[in-house]
Every structure is written in structure tokens, then in C-alpha cells.
Amino acid sequence: MTYTTEKSKFPVSKDATNETKLIVNGQGVFLFQNTDNSKPATLYFYNADKSNGYKITLDLIGVQVSRVIDGIKYVDSKNNSGLVNAQGAYYWVSLDAQNQTIRVGVGEARIETIIYQYTFLFTSNKSRKANKLFIESLETVQISSESASKPMRLLRDPVTNKLPNLVKDNLSMDDIANGKFLPKANLSLGAQQLYDCIAGKNFTLDTADFPDFVQAIEHSIKTPGLWCNKRLQEKSTEFDKDKPNLLETYLRITLGQNNGESPGIPYVMEIWPVGHYSPVHSHSGANAVIRVLNGSINVSQYAYLSTSNPKPFAVADFNKDDITWISANLNQTHQLKNLPENAYTCITIQCYLYDQEDNAHYEYFDYVDDEGRQREYEPDSDMDFVQFKALMKKEWSERFTKLKKSTFCCLRQRT
Image (cartoon, helix red, strand yellow):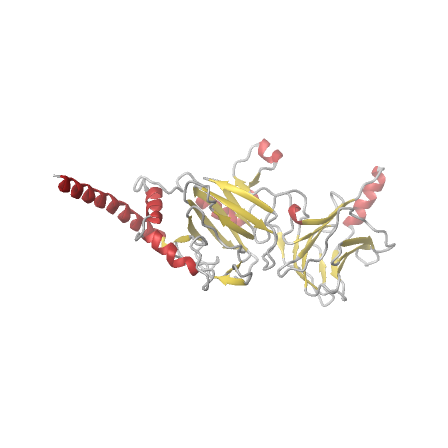
């Protein structure tokens, strides 16, 4: 999990005993839900004959980990939480033979969501090697029959390092060493295709045929009666029919057609006036890349979508030409804001594609409204890009015509 966002799959060998074979012995991430917090969530990582392994239990107090054969406990003195009373919560356990570490977390499987961590330490190299071999002998994960837990997904690689939000191609040695950028090559194949389409120098708003495109959009937003201004007002009840909120609006200008491989049309130019924001929402389990074309966008990231109003685990600002990413497992839930103190409208290009293993194709973005209710939003289009650009040209051109007429009338009145 140091970099890769693709190498994941659904459980491959699950039977009535809730047993799943690890993709690689001794490592991986197991994600699961717990449907009844009155019952602890208990699972086991077992060796081939189930004679030994690790027992991992989560309850409302914390996380307990012990060895199966003798009950030796592995205590994380910093652990003070386990199961959470929050709609939408899910959990993960990471087994890591190479670094001899067990980690447990809530929500997305990543460093920021860890609630328990234990690394085996030894005074001799012989003991260290023996323990590594033991962890590598573990080949299945099994949920206890007394647990109210349900398996969700199995990932090949353990959680190791914090993943960077920015994507970059042609990395330097320093880039790799510092871990500031996610290499484009470590995106899923679908996300790599999206990246290649929107990362080039020619993917810009102001072009030779319309060098004032950004100014025209700003003008349309700020001028009563023009399209952007009117459309934003029309969308004030989009996320809550009973409570109009002009600031909780943004424009979706789509490029191309819906080919059945993404939630909505895969390429969407989103326009965020200053002070406007989205609700907290998730992304259908789809892959995505997002490039900032103008201004900057503030992103709050959440471990899972919940009506219980959890705090974001991270907040980041992305500026012009930054490219960030979403995978089927990571960065799925966020809130976007063009902060009130910013000077310019933010314009982004959002590109979506279902994961290769996704055969459900959930077509909605789930979100939480102001009343704390989880709802579905169908990612629709406010206008096609070609039509929108032509309309902005027309409005911008008419601005000068009206200005000339106004100036002419003023001169006539003075004479």
C-alpha cells in the first residue's frame, strides 16, 4: 500500500464459515462491516491447519490482539477505540509480514485511520526471522461465527505508508524518496487513461479561439440574467428541496457521452464560484482523476460517508494544474470548497471510470444533506461543453456591444 492503488479484489474464497484465502500469504488488508455493536467483531488469521494464528477482536472499548495457540496478548498502549456507533462505518485489519506489523483502522484502509498498531520487536535476528516465517505461514482470514460482521473486500498489499494526494508523471529520484507524489503508473489502468487525457499542456481553458474563456465565465457568474448566474440560482435546492442554499451549488459542464463505464458522463468540468461548496459525498466506488484548471479548491477527506457527522481525517488545498486521484478504495468521500477568502472562481476537470472489477456500476453519488440524511445524487449535466463555450462567447461578445451602446447613449445625453 505504499503506492499502489489498483492491486485489490473482492474476497476470492469465502464460504459459509466466512473464511477467505489471502491473496499473498502473510499480508493483505481485510475490510469488513459490523452490523450489531452489541456483539464484538472477532476474526482470525490462520495458518494452513488452523492450529495457530492471530485472534483480533474489536468492541466498543478498543482492539485486542492475541496469538491463538497460547493467548499471548499484543497491546497497543495508545489504542482507546474500537467499534464506533456511526452509520456507514466499516473496519479494516492489515497484516504485514515484511514489516512484522498488525494494524487496525476504521473506514478507508490508510495510515490516517489507524486505531491500533503493533510492531513485533526482537533482540536477535534469529527470533525476528522466525516470527516473519510464522506470519508468512498465515494464509486465511476467518470471521467468528458469533460475530455480527460481514466481509467487504480483500486487498493484496498491507497498509504501510501515507499515500500522497498529488499525481505526477516522470518522477525524479527525489520525488520517489520524499513520497510527495503518487506515480501515474501506480494508478489503476483506467485512471491512468484518464490522467493521460487531461494532464497535457493543451488541456486548458483559455485557448487561441477564445482567450477570455475564464473571464467570460466569471462575468456570467457575477452578472444577473446571464446563464451561469441564473443556473446557480436554479440549483439552490438541488441537495435539499426544503432548504434553498445558493452556496451549496456548482455547475457541471460535461464533455462527451455516457458510455456506461462511469457514474454519469466521464469528463465533467465543474465550476465553483467563490464561497461555494459541495455536500460531503462519496463516489460510487469509481476511479477518478481531478485537475484544477483555474483557481484553487479546498478538499476535506473523510474515512467513510456517515450521517453522524464525523470529522475529516485530512484537509488539503489544490491549486492550478495540480492533479489528484480517487481509487475504488481510497479518497472516495470528500467535500469540496472554494473558500470565501479566495479571489477567483475555481474550475476543475473531474474524470470518472468504474474499476475493472466493478460489475455493479452504482450510478449515484451518495451525500449527506444539512439535516443529516443520506441521499442519492445522480451526477447529471447542466450543459454540454461545446454548447457552453459557444454561449460564453456570445455573452462575452454581447457584453462589449452593450457597453458600447451604453457609452454611446451617455455621450448623446451629454450633447
